[in-house]
Image (cartoon, rainbow, N blue to C red):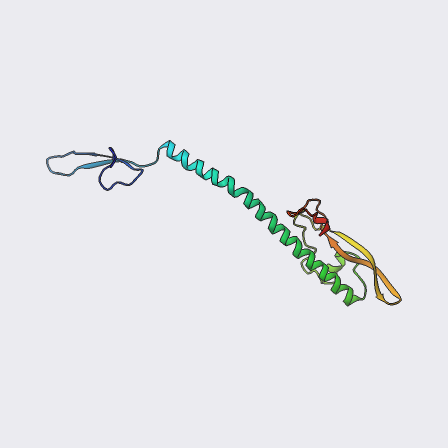
Length: 159
């Protein structure tokens, strides 16, 4: 045991045992100072900071993966609803707001997870054949308005 550690003391606790005896008592008293030294605290803080430097890039990557998953899901849902609208109404929608007004997008136009707005979606408009002799112009596809590239290197606007 260390010089200042008494019987039954824990690591990190500095105790001095003094043999103070009075006439009526015959037991020793213990004076303890609880706590850690400055060096011990600095070592622990340094270890925590080192672990945090490894965790931050992984956290950022997880956030980007989550945003990409939301974008993929939103694009899939909007494309499916554009197709359903076209089949049901026998014409393609002229805007994304028309999908909302017709009740296909109940929660409104979703927010693009990379631009933070529901107004940045880019739409592809083409003539859609309705019958052999008739065609209607409207939205056939939708893309993200984000100018960034994905983790794989492809632009979000090309998804």
